[in-house]
Image (cartoon, rainbow over all chains, first blue to last red; front, side, top):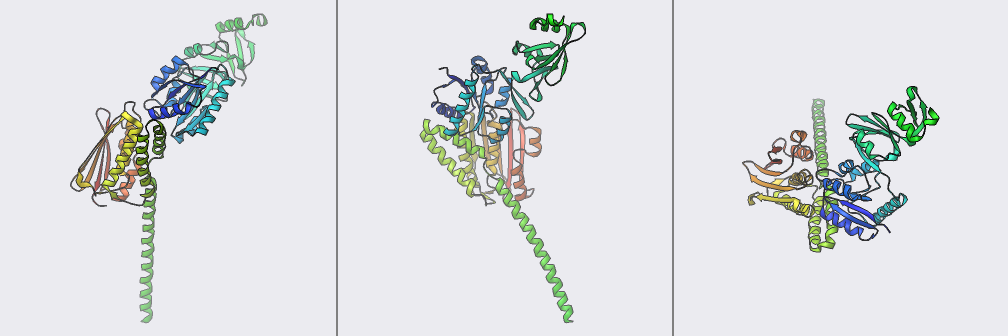
Length: 238
Length: 223
């Protein structure tokens, strides 16, 4: 059986030792790396692509939340912390779970159960982003995003029934997202093609796309040609 | 005439009653304030949970260390639970607590926390508010050690000045503007000092070069 690969991030050595010991009881989870700070963690995560992070929130330098924001691809996350005040925040962030130190064995076994369930349901875990927006945090699966708009140095993400901003350029994001699902319709917008309600032919062979929420978007001439070619729409529209 | 005498006494009796009522109200208010104060002068709960978590790890890897940590934690817990009603305690009792506290935090932060305490023997019985110096040290750990990857040195020096005891602490850290102005992180201690000593006690935080914060607490001999 393929093991669940874990990276453990906590600034206290004893706290890491304790989590390690608790994980001894679960041979299907393997700690592939551990570290005391967020900066090193980013490197380790990008290198090893773990399935799961066991993550302390309050750390010197950058916090656990800061760390997640720095990642291009966010694995599943369990927050482990002594600080109760973060509970609400972590849950708003849809973390897989949140436990307080010291962690009771019973509670830990429930956490592991959740991890196993989650990771077995999605054999190749869906790509997700982490965004901290003021006091709110979001884990956003890429498939939930229906529109990305360029706003100077930021990208505005439309997802579920809300929007948030990510400090990343549209060009950068275009490279990161699944090309089969997302399409750059013009200089400033990328859409998720799964959310298209209908497409209309406009003047000059340009396309107008209406999204599921009724938003009407104009596809540039050049991208209209590309879109038609990609989707074999030529015959239908010409 | 008799009516006049009666009226005179009734009048004074009534005035006295009003005075007593006023005095009582004032005392009650003072008692309430003191109570409120005592309630908030507690050790930080996060500290207990973090310590317990360290001890849990030590039980397996270093049983002797775990035993020591339990002794320290018990002492601090006893203090926190039972010492609530004293408005003032002798300086040496406060320092014993500070020492226990630092030793425990050292177990948690390991090489990230170093500390040095320099005290003259003579101030042993100087009365200080409970958890006053401890609040300073806790603040230093929270902002200076826990937030720094490499940690640093917490240095405490106690000297008797003319009419007050001066506690000087230095720790790594960068003060934000609002901390210099209002003593964020230590508002509880500030208000306790004001209640206890009026403006005779003082607490000031200063930014020193090299990312060092200096805290000076002056406690007068008597309230």
